[in-house]
Image (tube, rainbow, N blue to C red; front, side, top):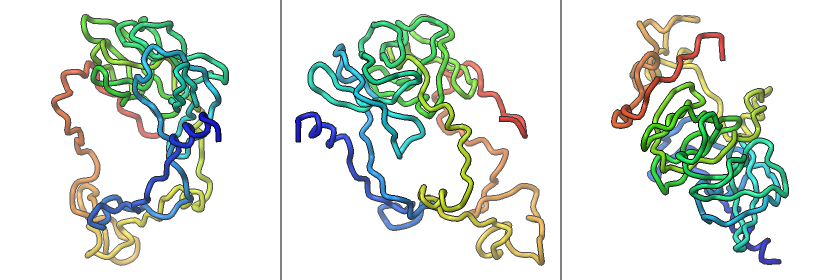
Length: 259
């Protein structure tokens, strides 16, 4: 086995299945279990190696995410997976540096990215790995540079501020066609590790607030509830209030019937 194959083997590791259970064996996420075996690809969302040119060895499928990943071999001998942008091809060069050319796949600081550029895999703290905008087809638009912060329009149409010293990758995430994927039969869902979901109204009163009644009865309450009795719709779920100061404009609400 050559050195490259050994390094690539370290990037593909097994993950133990939990079936939605915690370390106490209790189900904390419902409707999980089964599914086909798959290995996890260790993707580099950060800035390492800094200032070292890399060449794309190939674009690959990743069973753990919606987007494609790119295998990159760097001049210092490192081999890493990165999140592949649209139009990135085998043989293309990529680099991560504080300031470099603005082309898809290159990673640099937000303050050095021109207004009007699409970015993804955005960090929220300087020198941290990317956390925002990583799903298939997603991209954020750089709207303005304002002192030590950069204004971004997120895929949700939310406008928010991010520290300009944070890193982001130029381009949009690959596989935008993922949004048109349709799961045509239950067997595909089972292969994905998702078990059947039963309606609360089909249960008994002891199992769900919607349960009971004769025939197809209504839920019998002003608003639908979770199995634990909490209001399920129209409730604010945002908990990180300390990040409100970074939001300039809230995300646009989706109209019913429209995507």
